[in-house]
Image 1 (cartoon, rainbow over the protein chains, first blue to last red):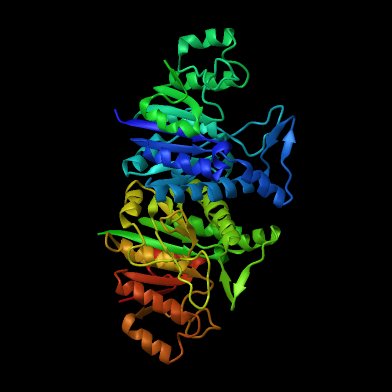
Image 2: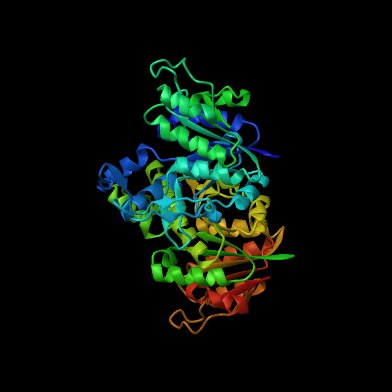
Length: 262
Length: 262
């Protein structure tokens, strides 16, 4: 079975041009088929401020109204995505930048209004990702670079969580590829001691997760991250890695960050 | 030989949502392989004004400085391109929105500085367009939607004339397809009498062009348009049409606007 690596990066890589340059070099050097998924970063917030459009918050959650969607479409799908593609091309990756609307690669459903109306936000389900279209791009030698915008198939673009896009793409592609999913974040991985970067837990098996929660090794914001990782593994992804973008080169030796597996 | 139609639209279609909706319906209904090329429109100018960035003009020509490039990348590649893709998807076209950087489809050269420094503007030559990559997208059942942004292969995005993109793509694709090129503009075609929309010249052969210039049928801004059309035909394009977007449906019967041929 062909191998595929899906890598998700966020603002801590995108907002720093040196970090981004080094990351894109390491990404290009990584062998095999690859898909890059990126979130937003400070640029969208800054553009909104320049245009006098305030971030709308309800009960501490960000709301995507029409104006916000216009901004994230311009910044994520235009400015960030296309500059990243141009940089990858210069480094030797045949990148192609896409939203979920392109090739109908990711069709989302607008989040239903319950206690909070999140606005133009897309949720994904097991039928959202078109593995066939992504496969035909990979087969043509292209490297898809996906931003955090999808569509509903009925003309509406939707703002969509990049972590969710990465895991949904990884799960869908695992029908055609042996798939690994890599989340780059601000820490070196799951740390035994949060104040000691050297205390990375190198590997967590699914049946060890509950124990690590119980003894406090995995806590706070790491719990949902790891929960989602093991859900992806349950649905067919071979391994999920979580670690720091500037150590991506270690992925080739499988020593990158914390590896989660079955 | 497979047939391919390349259609270019500009601001007069993009800036009016009803015109755009009808055009995209007609575009979707058109049989065979297709590529859509779009320019900008008023939105980029309006965003620039909202951000307090004035259009830079030198001797009446617009200059693409870094700020302007940021804006057109956001508006052309993000806002306009992705909304158009989402609309085409809803209408049944499997659209994929691209800049020239994506898949290295169009590699341009920054325009050399002579009397005027146009800034970050890309010029195309006979090696700019990757027909192979466009062909693999078409073969995968996709409908490329190209905006007026290219790259130089060395990380720099470049603002590029959409008419030139359309003709360069048409010429490059004519090695693989029987290619026709369609320019939508504000008139119904070449008019014998500029005040009479009913006076469309239905067909112009290459050897008739000089005569029509001499007798004044083709004049002013139409001269370079037709010159470029016949250049594309000389380089392998089967036919070039020029006409009004709202009559696109007539293309199937080859009665659309003015047809130029060998």
